[in-house]
Length: 386
Image 1 (cartoon, helix red, strand yellow):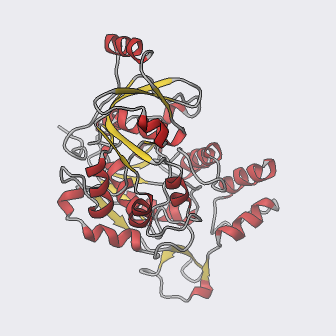
Image 2 (cartoon, one colour; image 1 turned 120 degrees about the vertical axis):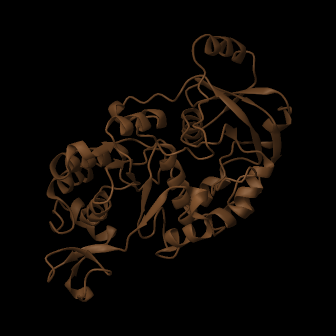
């Protein structure tokens, strides 16, 4: 009998209230003090509710926050690299008592969750930034987001009443329990996950297909939560994934899912974070390329791979697959990397993101060695309409 990989912490968490319990909690929630949360927190609520962030059952208290920042582990011993926290203003915090319950409302006023307050503590923004993002510069989008979290952090388990509503790409919105069942139904024992917040170009396609050679199937799992303003919009990216999978991948060996988490741009730490999430979704392997989850020049090119050496293999229990930067080599006549190609850089086709955006905005297709034309055409239309 085929079994799924064990979720992080040993059990897939489910914090979603259903049936009579949900109705009772909805009634109670009407009388609770409300805290308004933004889309980033909503994505964390969704990930906690469905088990994507197992073993978390809610937002971190002080000891877990400090342990994650300083030691990259939860107080219970599991590896964890990014704090998952709920922040409020000091004025709000003064009205919240330990041991009480509060209601978490989305931007439209929907009551999404009830949090039982077990901790309330000052948010050490500088520690958070320096440890997780390796910089205190607010020019870093992750650090900028940390400064918006709130002066005081509220910790405690949540019970989720209503998941955020998504009207787009509903066939791909798999929970960890659903993706795990799908992998079992397909008979997949070895599943490789691929994280992306960008369209897939030929270099990505090359490393994905290399990984597929030694696994049973691919879980293409793009991040669709909050990203930087200059990142390609989610709906455009999804069209690119669909046309690429339809034309260039075996249909029975690919599952497309959606990761509803927000992007942190935490580089090395986020590579670990993303691996843990894919483990919870049922992946046994995870692709880590150059500058995974990076931004600007804040991280070394392969820091996101080197950080895995700081953990014992049994701690993470998901196999990272490291890849060099890949490119089209003219003499080789194929995609390659520094590990497989003997030729000089002058023979390699590589375009910077800036150059690609210039071509697309001008209505020009990038070289076929860089991007599949079907993907490029979707991006051109998006640039024309922006």
